[in-house]
Length: 523
Image 1 (cartoon, rainbow, N blue to C red):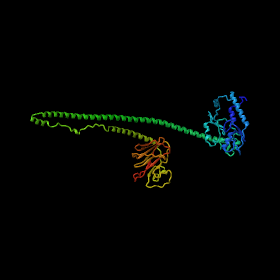
Image 2: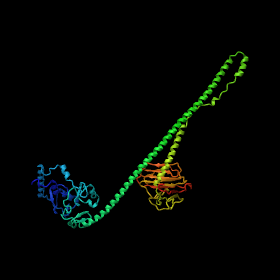
Image 3: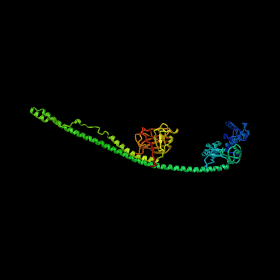
Image 4: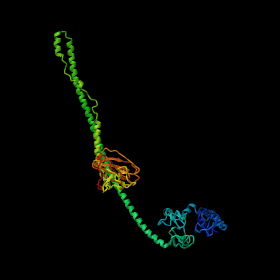
């Protein structure tokens, strides 16, 4: 046999390949239906299945067929193997480099349109080859999971049955595969089988509906992309504005610090100068008195040396009186004349910072109100000790407990109630009128977390701002527009609900209700 007419190794492997191990037959055997397999492959297949059937045509046998190696078939395979080996050694068949041969044998995907991706598997039932993307349904759809997959291969007769070599005219809805007439009357006779054209029309109808859904999804995704892009552009503008505002505030604070520093230095120097002037004045007075005392001392010394008794008596009457002197025991000079000066300067700085913080806090509350939501109380969560208004906007503590149906959602011992609407993302803002209540609890609640905080402010109207993604809950005095407290660093993994607890009445001192305030979005 010449190398020019000899089959290629690929053709040889395709022609004499065992459909179980996908290699050239080793110890080939033929079973009753006429299909050939490796002896070890078919025995292992039957042992694993527990029943005796042909892996290709699914024909079932009542008893296990007796297997004998087809020596003639084995000799033919061995002869062709030796012939191909000799041809390769002569440089004939298969002289192409292995890596190049691999490139030329790439099988394209039968589903891809336009540029076809390389197939990774072929389906013997569908008689088609699939790339990674189009192979996915065979791993997800139950019916397709039963199809047998092989290494990529081409199908020269895709419209003919591989078993009966008949046209594929029917379709099995259970197995999701095309059939010939013989298959539909054979192992698929109890399945729902329809004409291939009918299934094609139904598939086209579904295809059109799917196409409409895809178009709608594309439009929705494009809309979301535009929304995200616009939000990003707005975020950049807001950030630029915040940078400018922050720079202005910091500049003002720096100017205030420098001004206070200059004033502090000036005040300290002034106080030091005043202290020095006072000390110099006192020293001058002391020096003058010392001069007078020294003069007086000299005169008295001279008088003491006088021998004339009359001169001594008359002279002492004149010189005996002490010169006038200040009561220096009551005079003191404080060395710590600047005590409290620095603290007062820092206090003035704190005042400047607080004024800036109040302005920023007011702006912050105005901005947060853009995320206002309509909050309504959920009566199914309310304790029996609570009274809810008909509109679900007001809650107060009752003097007696109302018997209510028990449910997992209801608070039983705590006088609490939750909002109806839960939040799993985004930013939310609402306000609650607390009036002159002496005690109350507000916030958001979830099952797996419990956070508490103590405040000293006594607001009459409290604003709550939730930033789910940021993991923070902030509280503001809605009337004064000042920040009270922020719980930050939270990790929200569940829906959050507005939380209300009017607390006990305290002998009537805390009987006022909590009232959800109506808000206009973007106030």
